[in-house]
Length: 501
Image (cartoon, rainbow, N blue to C red; front, side, top):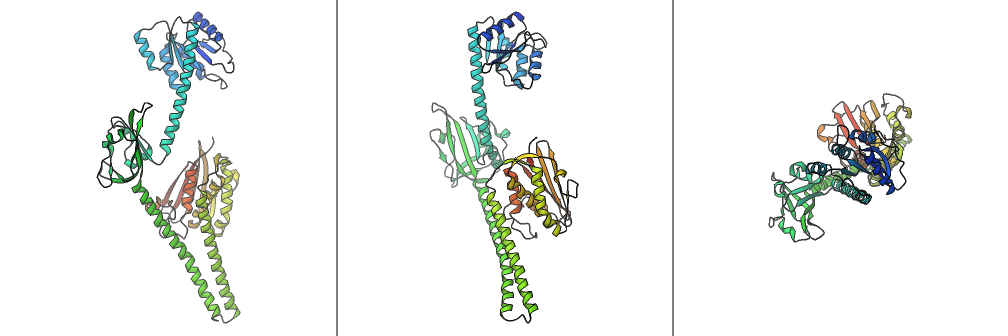
């Protein structure tokens, strides 16, 4: 690399400047001017190839320059404009061009790279100082603006409400994922199209159509009693609002529409209500049946049906066993309902997932042994933390243990003879799979098993909250879960969670 002069040590608080200039005398003059103005000169390089090499091969502890002064005519195969294009694509550094000519062709090429300044040689120190300070200030503002835009984009893309923006001509300029899902229209197919081609908003009673003109002079339109008419003829009841977008001078710039799909929401609420009623019905049945048995045994005892001590002991023993079963059912239901409530509280901390997994397995081993179900962990028949890779992550310890215990408990309940557990790290994710050799689940029910209170017809008795709890824990940890199941072969639950490198 051709560096005219040694690399400068940056003075704390002083902006660092990288100079790209192939004329040694001019470069030295710029260096003296910069130092006189209080800037740090990081280095002086004479070609585009040299500056790219300098940026990519700098020491790890060295920061990037705060600004680059780039001569347009340079030694080597690349001129300053082509070099600036490469820098803009890879780095966020403000750049100021230096040139001895200002012809129109050069100016047009330079504009494409979006420089922060354009200085004609020769220039005074005052001009150099003002250009650098303006470049630093504009770059700082642009960075803050980008950060604000990124935060806004994250928020709009994360919320569950549909958000759609329309310009002054009524054309769609933005649709967040929720809006794309509800309307069934991906943003790339709707951007720039008139809103009327995407959907129509009107009142439930068909008395009034929603139009762009109706919002120009209004502050907001309540969309409570409105429906969404899609091009395929589908009608969706919505709840939301439409508001004009105005600039600082109160000028009309467009419209933002936000809404929720009440049709889908009502369907979900109705499904949850039905499942809740079924859960309560099953629970009442589970409590009523043993209570009837206890009542029957008690009547037999009181009516003197027990003829001897052996019969009396048998009746009391049956009552005791049924009472224990009742207590167990109540405690299990209470535990799962508490888990469901606790899912709303998320307390992440730095933890070792391999230790979490080992602890959860040890908690479930007694039940597996009582059912004579064997366990294989990462191809080992013995459970030991050394059989599981060291994996660190941020998570809620209580929720993660509960998730694994629910998956293992579900597998234990249905397994014929064995359960296989594997846990491996893949890049920035941990992948946990739990496989049983049970009866399996028909494809029709796979999408429903994570719904609260849902139980697959013919399944063993339960509350329908265990797998719901599993999915909520996975979602709380920004992970994913999938199920592969084959009837009469078994089921595999695969959980993927983000972890540390």
